[in-house]
Length: 300
Image (cartoon, one colour):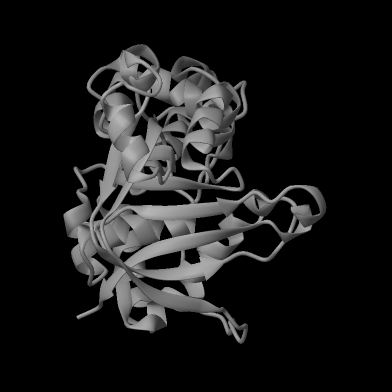
């Protein structure tokens, strides 16, 4: 229950200091965890980064104040942490769909974003199959993009990456010799987003020659990089077998955060999360699934 009560303490702190500078270290202390663990689990449970949540709350409150006629645009910008009326107006329009000046007129709809409140309810009672695995250092070859938000919650970003980089996927798949599987690596998770890799494990001889531009040539090889993931302990979970496992794995990630992690005796380690997708074809399409490798360490 420490995590539940601690997270509510952090949410209460945000509301009490919504117009102040709020850092994740302070919030994590109220949640009895490290800053990294707090940010990752907050995103898994809530579907927002800490920064997105605070920004949405501020813009929601700013809209209500402007609509009431009790504050000027420039004062609202300063109150809610924006350096200039212009930056405030841009953020306000992205959130509400209208300019701050239109909110004052009272002739437009505004968006409300209510504070999160934890409610304790009797849940669980479901089985979750998992295994604990120790992995040695892994060296992947792949390419990345920097995405906004919480890993997995912005499927549009990942879908666009997959569609626009098909040739690179075919190259990696062919070099690896494993066309029925691929890896996603999620790393450098922060308040502004995360790095997302599409990658494969290549044979040593192939990776070395690719590095030296012997296989593809300098121009083609420049699209790829090596991603070294140090030795790490993982909790490994599998989705159900189905034709489109990419559609069901987010529910599994949330269940891990809600049902397994709080009572497991582990916490999230500051290491990359890895997702392995098995893309079987032909008669095996309904046997496709995803493995989630969640980096963990003992919760002391």
